[in-house]
Length: 504
Image 1 (cartoon, one colour):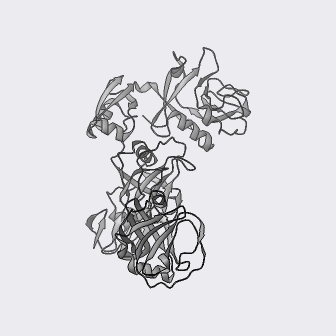
Image 2: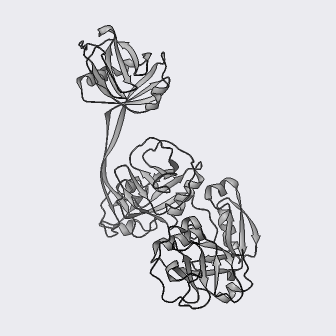
Image 3: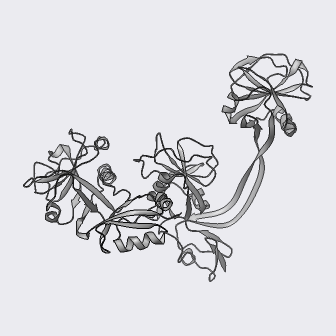
């Protein structure tokens, strides 16, 4: 039998499973796969009409009234009609003939209502009016509300008498009547003609380098978690503790990938399932180029394999020789600094962000001897403290992080490092320790003035933690899993210490 996997046709034995079909394809175990069994596309006219004027474009959503149906039948004839009057209450376009009966009563209109009116109570001079404010009026055709302006409402502030309607177009909706299974069960048996997608392809937006990098970080393990799922979007809220400036903003089309730059949920990544208008708090990070069915049906608490284009170009954690080959393969020229030996470990790259590095065409990579990168273990039992530590050190987004020495002195039973006092306000106290051991890493929590301070204990103690605080003011976050004597040798204030949770 024949199946198509990520756009490539494959021949398989009858009754083959999904595991066989996806062999060699981009896929992280446990993530979702979309299996297209059949598909039928249906295009139909909606009750929305796009009205393009000299002042801009707005969308009218018709209601179910007879007047609305009558207007629909003559909508195309509105092209060329001009704005005759613009007052505080209404903008009026016309005139055109209808067979509307006369009704001289007064009626109430809400802002953005679209309704029909008769000039001089004569239906040969009918007007389409849009309420610019809540008001009561007698317009000769009864209430005759045909719908409301739903998009482009700001255009009403710019319409002037004489502005014309350039075009009126019914908006179409295309729906897919799909028969799609989304599963992570690799024993799923296939049939001839099935079409399979194993990953979400993400094409990054070069106009949003910071938002794009945030997306790359969220997918840095090869997959992305789906933490929210609605009819309009799937989202990932794994890292909301970020600073995202305003970047490229546009209409959120189906398949658009955005990152929220302000407000509640700043840093949340969205993948859109339905078209939504532009929002100033949503940066466009990229678009889904592959695997839209996966994203359309992915439920909350699932995971999706992600392949980004371009892929992340970060050499931190590699040797100088490996990093240079990696970067050159991406079309980026690396300039070695620090320890430039081939076996030195790259601990810093400038710029770090992928799209900026590609745009520059070159980066500076800073190396140090392997023995100067120290291994640590972070305890995730206290998620808030672990998140704080990784965020402040940079381990949240790269394999090697940094600690800057705040205070050290020969014979002192601890060494302390600068933290982030603002973020440290969220460090809730843990249960007080009974004893700390040499090598324990701790934080000063919000119960003490220097919240956020980071320390490593150099001697066992029952009284004081790694930052010198008593138990109620200390959160233990991990352990220094390397040679402390080597760390402390010649260590001075303001020195930078490089740390990692990985095997380098």
